Image 1 (cartoon, rainbow, N blue to C red):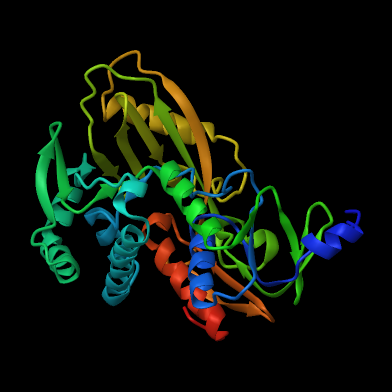
Image 2 (cartoon, rainbow, N blue to C red):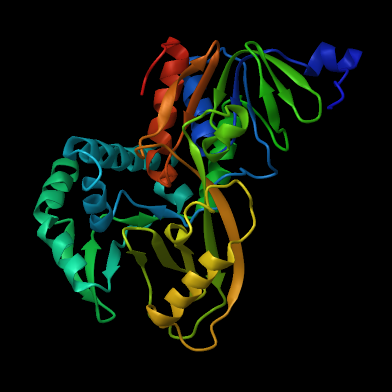
Length: 374
């Protein structure tokens, strides 16, 4: 049982504030929601509470891709969803990236747009995806005004589809700039402040502190079920590693494989970042645990050796996992859950692309106090 925290006279007098809004989660969605809500409500008093020393989910633990969906992923989605639904999500991702760049500026993101490649080792799959490129190019031309965004090519002797609008960012530099921007707006951020319970008018931290508030937003993505046990948002662990410098590195750019489940890119200093493959043990990866799944790691090492054919003797220098949150249809949740309790979560591995847009919707929802905006 957690011992209740008893604030002092001085704390109650000057530090123990009641807030108009408490946002749980200082990742991309939570921070942008705070920023947008403060703009809409400049006199409001709000705080962002983060469980970790850094954002604890995926915002600083991702691969730094600024993408909206490979052609293979779009075709795979069409096997399970309606065409309007897939297009609507593509549009949300594309517009979300535009809004992200507008809000932060390319310099703060270290944004680059060299285009990206989706690799194929199965010719039949490649041919099926290629057959659908006219449709996907029509969609992207409607959104961007650019013709033939997707085109079939060859890369390192593999069949590939090039996407001319794919980009990448430096996730650490981006989040550092976003945190500074939010603090500068007058929003309070508290780190190492894990919320363990929510009530109609307060939240309780794991150190016994109780904070009063009029409204609560859960921007907790993969951790949402910790506070809402029956939540439809499921956690999904993603594994990433970075190699030591590789001489004469052949893979320079942004790459996807296997409907986007594998992803890799070069980093400064001739290093490779490689991640994904959770589809090989999906059920085990539905967890918030930070441990590394040896099965997934083995798949990625084999991929690096057998498909990428990295030179003999390459070495992993760094490895980590991050926690994503997946909604039932890859479309994020943005709605009221209970009295004074709201959620914006379930970014389904596309937080960089749709987090800013979701935050805008959440800020508007909280301002309007509407029951549904999903």
